[in-house]
Length: 277
Image 1 (cartoon, one colour):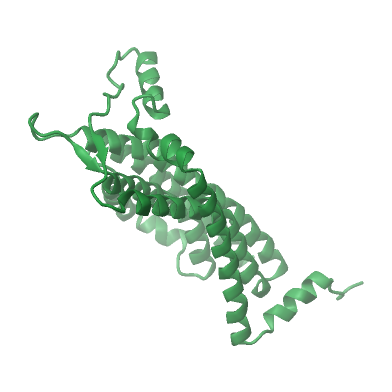
Image 2 (image 1 turned 180 degrees about the horizontal axis):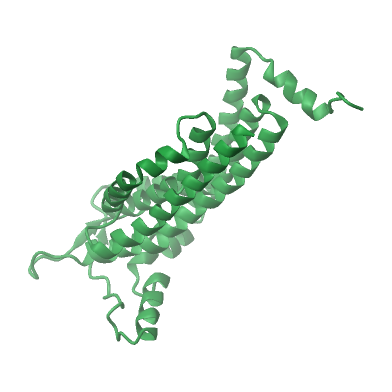
């Protein structure tokens, strides 16, 4: 029957008509559930510290790490000899604080908990904003939850398997003199690794951010095209910040960032086109 609404739509309509304080109460519970999800995954990572540290966190320190083997295989396939093969890691990790290993354990567990709970956090975000959206917009928002999760995980994997190993190799083996050996603190190693991974995961959310900014009219495809050259400069600056100071790592970061920018232009064009229909 024309004009008839489903119980699902009525539920969302009731939620959309709540007062400001009611919205704050709903938001509080969304945040609580997200925090509980992070805590659960954090506890899981804390319990399985052997796997988290030996197989994941400390793995780039090993010369048998997957990325190093793939680069070496590529070098041989291109008949370049060992030019793309990496040297053995020449630094050792040390702990210089009484509670250093324990606090590092908690920090790594918290970061792992956030990464694993990220898809659920996005679902909670969608559940909070969906009552204020139209039916068609809810479907689009749900798709953004999916693609936001995919891009986040791609960013995590890109940071972990590409940028982090190159950073560990370059910074860990770099010396100013043969008389000086590298004994790197555990906290410094963990900070470098996690900051790279989280930075890449956030940067890979660019298409999602552009979608929302285009939706509210702050960004247009024409504006992004106009500032394309400026964006390339910004991409190179971001690449220099995220990566160690060697040209190979910066190029490896810059290429996907440029691709994401071009993808964002396409997304912005689609959003503007739909809004004018």
